[in-house]
Amino acid sequence: MSIPEELWRRFQEGDPRALARALTLVESGHPAGRELLKRVRGKGRAKVVGVTGSPGAGKSTLTDRLILEARKRGERVAVLAVDPSSPFSGGAILGDRIRMMRHHQDPGVYIRSMASRGALGGLAGATVAALSLLEAFGFDRIFVETVGVGQSEVDIARVADTTLLVLTPAAGDAVQAFKAGVMEIADVFAVNKFDLPGGERIVQELKSALELSPPRPGGWRPPIHPTVAASGEGVEALFESLEAHHRHLVEHGLLEGHRLERARFEVESVIQEWGRQRTQGAGALVARVARGELTPEEAALALLGPGPEAEEGAL
Ligand SMILES: Nc1nc2c(ncn2[C@@H]2O[C@H](COP(=O)(O)OP(=O)(O)OP(=O)(O)O)[C@@H](O)[C@H]2O)c(=O)[nH]1
Ligand SMILES: [Mg+2]
Image (cartoon, rainbow, N blue to C red; front, side):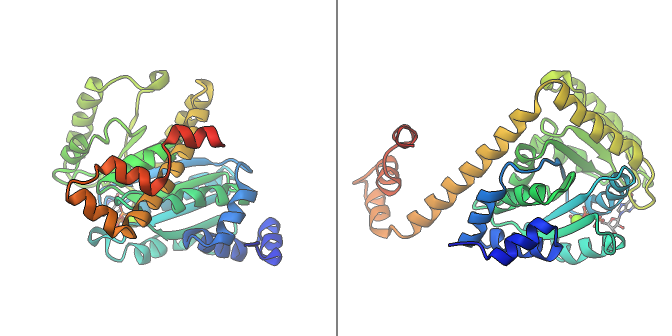
């Protein structure tokens, strides 16, 4: 399937409508989308910041403020707001649009919502692929907002260069973070809604927990920032920490590892999706597993062909 030449030309000229069309092709898994990705992959490089946290923590409001900071520094900014299509975030897309509306007229800012269709409730491979399109389009920074309701926050840490975890003084927020293991994956913390009571306590809890957590690559110490996204308080310092983390990655040669991890995530997503599709069409084989005539491994091998070593050798 070839890419419509007109679309490719307009994409290269920087037409945002061509970008929107291209993203739709990628999101829907259209062959032309895959072809486009082949052309653009590896072109361009953005600082990718994952913004995660519980529903309503203020991720969109904070991102809206961070966009302003990035623009002050002359960066071109894209936002991917991942809608998990889950009951947790009803109306998230509309909310995001409204909260980031002020950037509507700014050609240096592009905001896009994407549905997450990850097989296991995490980030969809297509969402990650979209990052390559945005990078090739020439954005300097990409914020990816995901609601942390399970797998998606672990995924985002694999895909982003820097992971920002947004907590609030709301009861249970910190506890949730400890339980879900996101403490280990966040590079920078924001305690948002610091205008509400209890913020100082969360900061102290976080500090104690971080002291006990294992050391990070290159000795990075995750900073904790009190913020009031609603007014912008603390956001400039938060942005500086995002920058500091990126510098840390560069100085310690860690950036490449992040890019490899992102590619690994994409390959895994494809395998997962193929596995799901093929298993769905294999009722007879699955029934034999249920009857004990085949092991799940034997069935999987039959569906996916030879093992991974053989695959690698064949390439
Ligand atoms: N008091 C207070 N309210 C805030 C602050 N930041 C955001 N809010 C409010 O919190 C609500 C949720 O903000 P969002 O930015 O939509 O939060 P979110 O994390 O993006 O929400 P989802 O995407 O639905 O998970 C809105 O009503 C905001 O106005 C803050 O610093 N203080
Ligand atoms: Mg939001």
